[in-house]
Image (cartoon, rainbow, N blue to C red; front, side, top):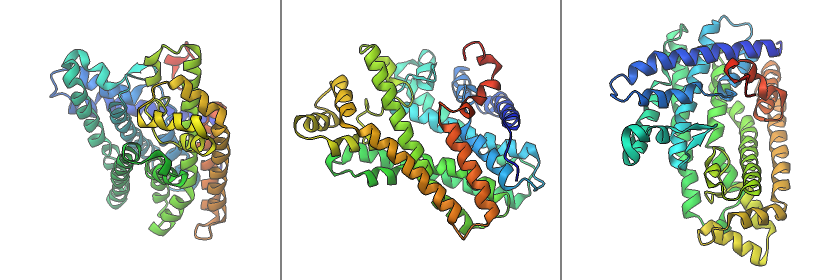
Length: 381
């Protein structure tokens, strides 16, 4: 079971980028042809072709290689499955941007912002919502069109679609936590439980699809999921912490640049969300500072600069860093010691776990491999 080289990873991502660009210019263009405003296609296509590490698709390709290196699955079919994962991810990001009210993602206008000129401010959000629905509806097509045996295509599509539904339910649970629960009553375990139903199913779906190609049974898939949930929870906490760090940096540099706070993954605190970071700060604060943070979460205090300072002084960020390490250790321990998985599968999954961790870390050289695929970014990278 050879671990993929950087050259292989770069080649796989290039094939994935090409597949997504073709999809945007064929299936997506055909699906949006009825829309008289060409901006609908362009707004949706932007979520497929903009710069990305392709975490979900590349995790699948890495796992498929390490788990099933000796199978006869055609490379084009592997690329097609990876593309389906990225198309669906584009749909959920588009919908997330609507929910969060973001105007930019990765330096580019979000769909509902880009459609304002064509549809007006009142209807642009609705038009963007439908554009996301188009992407979500088309997402399984690359799997269904693959040259795999029909029963295998059916099984892969079933797993794929079930994950889509589970994540949507998980997202609604997050909203309920944010608006209905007293911040003092929300525990860290509550937040991690919700994280297990948000990003975790998407990333674990990449691994499940790769494992399914080897004929692995449902019980083994359950054990893979059980092992991977702490890893994905750790990624979510890491994402929240990175967003807070970026928010603090932006506020320190220019407190008046409020539009910058809507950049993707940087404004959970600005949205008053109940994150592990916020929970950890509440656990460590007392007196006036704790009351101040509670007032902010309740919407009766708007001094975000002061809140960032309070959280920073609480030591909550250090707690999150330690929690990420603990969660990743749990995942490694589960996958390497689970007797229900064959030794070769444990070894392969451990390798993919390590790859995903490196890909998710912006400081890792692995996370920047995609720049070698995107010649259009060389001038700015």
